[in-house]
Image 1: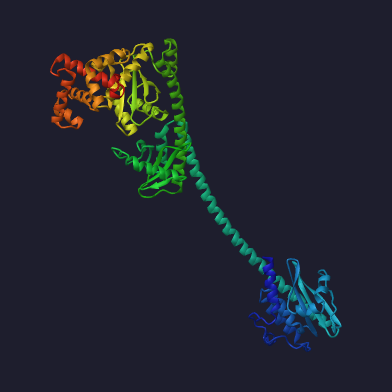
Image 2: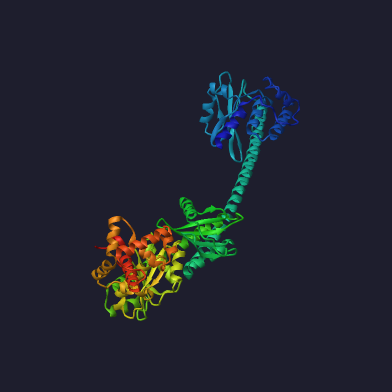
Length: 597
């Protein structure tokens, strides 16, 4: 700013011919507008009037350069003087004014600077008298006026020159004071503007901090209360005024707070759900999808579910987004904690169930079951769960655990390669567990086998085999999905594990050997046709439909079965043995792929 001011003053001072300020200065100033007057002696009686007019002109302007120019142009009003140079002090340095070019050529500039702020003589060729006169005010030195004369000035002329110097210095003091006040006013205005902006910013920051503190306080209260997902959605609804909800990764509702909950909640579309999760995963924060603002709930990169606000009117602002992000963080911590607890509980359960299935002493079994909160003294049931295309990993095991808890089953569970095993302290409901798992997995392609009641830990390994037999029988039946109880299998109970396999194979060869050999040689399906015929209760239409053949084709095959096997389907004994043989062939021996000759 100082350099621009110096440049401005230098430019103004160097313009000797610039116009005078408006003032009533008389004919002498009108003459000044036409240019500097010739250096002719001024009558002594006119000098006071011209100095007075000059004074009015100088005090009529607040431009320091103009004040100096007026003094230099009207120096002759004080006597036989010439103004060789003028200087203004700007930031401690002397800035040359009008007439500086000739002054430099005469070496005046260097002489003035060597005076170091004092008045003193200057040497100018052809000028017997020369002085550098300081222009001083209350603020100190304002500049210099370098004056020469071809003759030594008289006392009166010196007095008039001193008067001109004093009034020029006074005018400079007034102009500098005005500039200082103007700059102070501008600075004050700038500072007031900055203060207003800072106050507004402070108010905004305080409001933001207040909102953040409210969000932190509420989420901290939720975490301390241990209210889980319901408490988080309730707090988010209270903060934002918008309905809040939690869905699992499959799109099933886990919690809703606020008005407008759909009833029933719509079933998710798996393809669209995956597309939505991919879109959410690509973003770093909440994403708007239709009328919802959705934040993913992640744990180690895995999306466990989503936390969402229903915002049909698009009212969400930055505060709403902040609250949603904090709530999603709290929900992530909550689900992570629950997952750790579930994993720990699952590991303890798995170890205990593995030992129970393998066989362990009762004292240890009772003590360990009590430690994990399971009453092994009650009558137990072994339950085996198998779902198509689902391996029995930790994820599926936890899914089974959630479904069992949802239907009120108190159980221990572990995973095997292709199924999950539960040891439950009550007989499962016929359909409840299956329906709960169908909802959890989104598919009904699963089978459950339940053992007979077990009254001692020592019986659990045997009951496990019973549950597996019940599951296997259901899987190989016409309705392969659902729940099967071992104590309801009837004849199939004697076909379970523990029987001599060679004896069973011998029985099958006795009644079905000819048909098995015929099928092997001719790539036919006589044994399967007979098995379906018995499964359909001897109904021709149902059997033909299940085999996708014509009724007449079925009649032909049944006649060929009679001829090849030598057994009659109308004979009660033959019919019973043939039916049992087909069941053993299919369920115990695994059909044509495993049947031995």
